[in-house]
Image (cartoon, rainbow, N blue to C red; front, side, top):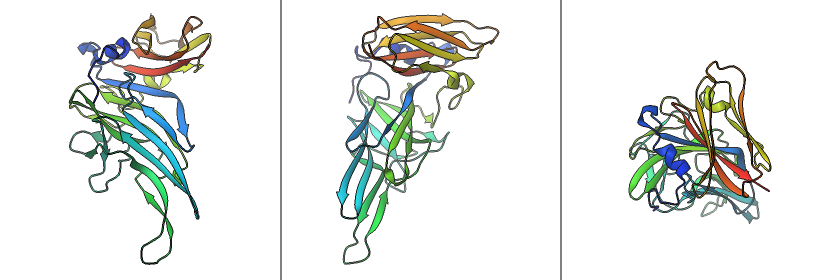
Length: 288
C-alpha cells in the first residue's frame, strides 16, 4: 500500500490531481511515448499509474521450454494492495473495449500475483488423450484493449486503465498509455483521458514530444488549437525546471515549443500539458 501524496510525489503530478475545480480536471492521463514492446524472457514493464515513482503493477513476459516448443506467459501482478479487474464469469483480467465502465461492481477485483493476460501452454490431458496448446486469458491477439486497474492509496480506492496490445500466441505485449480518476471511488471509462471527453480528442491526439530520448533540444508539438495551454516539465523529485504558457486565439498554424535540454541532468522527466478542460502527462527521457 502506498502513502497518499508522499512528499516524494512530484509537484507536477500533484498539480494535475488538484487542478482547479473550474477546469474539472479529474483524469490524469499518461502517454507512453514511444510505445513499449516487450518480447524477451524475463521482460518487465513497471506500470506507475499515478506517476509518483512507485511501481503499482508489473506486466511480465516469461517463457519456458517444453519438448513441443515454448510456453509463453504474459502476466500482470498488482503490487501492494492494488488490484486488477477480472471478468465476473471468467477469472482472468478483462480485455475491455473503448468506453467500458470501470467501477467497484463491474469486475471481480483480484490482488493475486501473476494473473494471466494471455499464456500459451503445452497441455497433456490426464489419463491419456492428445496433448494440445492451451490458452489462458482473454488477451490473445488483442489490440488497443484496456485492462481495468484499482489503485489503493492509504486505503482510498482509485480506478484506472492501461491500454495494451497482446500479440497472437503470446509472443509479445505492448504498453501504449494509461490513466486514472483522481477522485476516490469514482468510476472511469476505458480510454477516458478527460472529464469532458473520451479517449484522445483532437487536442490531446495532437500533442507530441520529440526526440524522446532527448539530448540537447526538445520539441513539444501542440498541433493546431485555439486554447491557452500551460506546459511544465518536472524531474522525478517534483522540481519543476521549465514552464511556459502558449496562446493561439485564432487557432492558426501548428503550435510548438522548443526547449533547450543541455542543462537537464540525465534521467526521467514528466511533461505536463494543460488547458482549460484537459491535462495530460507524458514521460520524457534525457540522455547527455
